[in-house]
Image 1 (cartoon, rainbow, N blue to C red):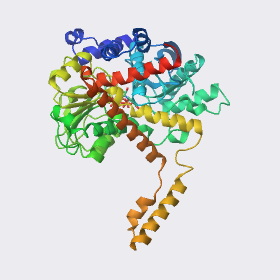
Image 2: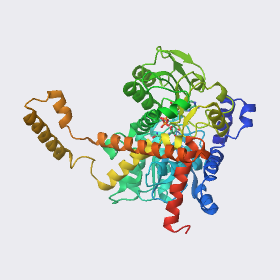
Image 3: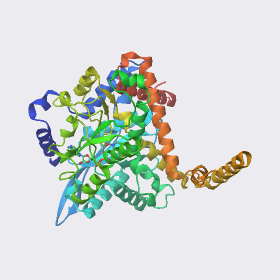
Length: 491
Ligand code: NAD
């Protein structure tokens, strides 16, 4: 009941009843229609398409947890959309707005996302319907551990079965509790740590995972900016330097996108919004100062480095070159799409644009880099973490010193041949072997580059696809279909 009431309140607050009633905001329906659009262009048997589209399994559970002096009932889900590759993989979301349809849709997006970036997992997603901000850390821990225990009981958690990760409202701490609960309930399993990713580095996590989704978004946008002839069609020119960026969401994903695009690419972050409003400054926001303000006050409101944005969706209407929705689904919808003033939408969140809004954006010539590609950095680095946990050794540990010795020899040879000394700073840079985080980021960058090129080439090869999202779905469907066919499920 609590979930249904919360959803009604959000719709009324965010949109106004009449407009919301005009379009379907059910994410499961939206994803299914996006799938159908791409599927119509493919030579894949109908039965197989139906199998790929369906959600294979959903576990719904409700459980009691003692909160203060009384027991509260929590509703939770874990969906496995496709097991064509195992384990299945996907985040866990804590929010008042979690529903079964949302979890199934997000699991489906995970299947397609993994296929697009060639990560060998099926898609999954989970969620508990509650707002963690209304509970103490001890209470959130109890709720998390109970949820994990329920998943173990039904075989919805395990290194070879189903491997969760962080999503909206969850982070490293929750993942560490899940890993510990799993270990307690299944003692003696040597691969136990691989039951969940996004853990703290000291608990079997991998360097670069926390930042990975934001990093992937940065790499994806950079890749798009390499294709100048494509950008021209959308009225974009030049490089990323100086581009005005507005971001909805200043959580794990939004914060890192803001940091990386401003620090590494010279973008101007002119507006950031979150659940309580936001802040805008045409000269560019100081991201470090804003993060400090949020750490002190819990939000963006009252930040002295910019003007206030009142509502949670106001940031989407700030005129900019690149708009990055990095909060939640259905944010760009029929009721605000005509006021969105940007040339590019980089979908860091899952499902931030409704179907009708997407069509309007395409007609208006706004470039949309779709979620199923752009936010795949998280699952890509989760894959690296999972393989690290299974191999029980940190990336780079075996080869780093050997690599450095080879480099030292190379520099010495250059000095000998040229009879010149390599300057100290350059020498240090040349000699240093790769750390774990360097390997992670280089693997992620290569993955995001290759995936973008594959989507782009697919679109160029078949103009019926029309846009990057439909092309990305086509790439994903073809790969999943091939996998099912090879498994012999659909000979
Ligand atoms: P988070 O909980 O760390 O941050 C969420 C942010 O969104 C916060 O700033 C919050 O204030 C804001 N927000 C919440 N409700 C809002 C509303 N109604 N209006 C405006 N802003 C609102 O979550 P996150 O991990 O950064 O995830 C953000 C999005 O990215 C989600 O759609 C998630 O599914 C997607 N995503 C996350 C990851 C990951 O690795 N964390 C990976 C892939 C995709």
